[in-house]
Amino acid sequence: MRHLRKSAVSTSFRMDFGGQNFKMAALKSKSCDDLNRADALNELGLKDCALDEDIRSAFRQRLKQAHPDIHGGTDCRLRRLILARDLLMSEAKTISEPADNAINFHADNTLGDGATPLTITLAQALYGGTVTADVPALEFSHADELLTSLTQTKTLSVTLPCGLRNGVKLCLPCEGAARHEMYFEINIETDDHCRVWGDDIWMTATLDRRLLQYGGKTLIETPHGLQDIHLDRDVPHGASLCLKGKGLPATGTAPAGNLYIRLEAQPDVVRPVTHILSEFRQRWAS
Picture 1: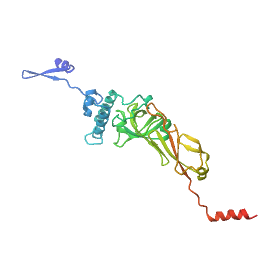
Picture 2 (picture 1 turned 90 degrees about the horizontal axis):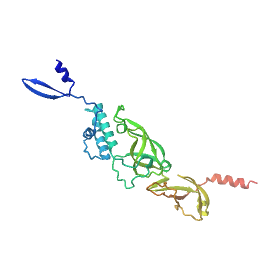
Picture 3 (picture 1 turned 90 degrees about the vertical axis):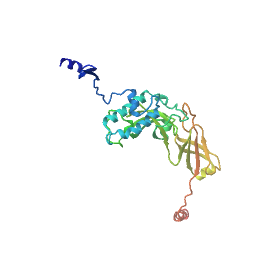
Picture 4 (picture 1 turned 60 degrees about the horizontal axis):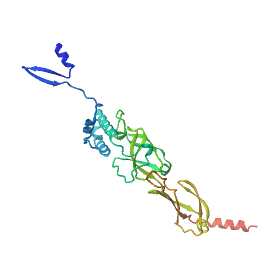
């Protein structure tokens, strides 16, 4: 009995069956959090040379299978999957410049797939700021967060630099995610009267027809605020003005864009006959 107690705490012990000794390894309990790089690669079915986009793709493919709501999924399996992703992503090379230099992105968009779409306003593209975004909780949660549904969402607070371009993919600092930076693809939302093309902004301004005919000064509301404009005589309907440097601001890799304003004449207002007769009587009443 004394010999058995001593063996139970050692790394291995021997048992005698009919004069033959068999060496058996001591049993170890492996927790959900006990994960090294080899385990993480195995969890995601990846090779050692996996890139960031490979990690994201593999994680998404296995996500639903691991969720406890699905047959065969468990809390431990889901937790290990999230830990594997975070471990490999933290060791991988960053896919863009640091957050404080986020505007220095690659113009050729060769960073790979896996970016989360992020819609921002034109004002946010011009001046930067903070935007909130609802994203799938399964893809952006910490390993110890309680997830109750496959469709569960969570809100991220994303910090934006000024001068973002449509379609650019880059890492941005954010609060609420498993990592301090996340990978996004930018979409600038505009209305029917304003569009973004590359570095330039195109908009439409509707002016009094007499101003286009006789010329003069006027104020036009633009994404950069009110602009003082002087028009020559006989400006045709649909003509465009170009304000240099009033498009998207310059960044480390892109020049400042221009603002193009398409001028349209206000439609003529047809006055009711009763109004015309009333003015005529008042004018000649005396």
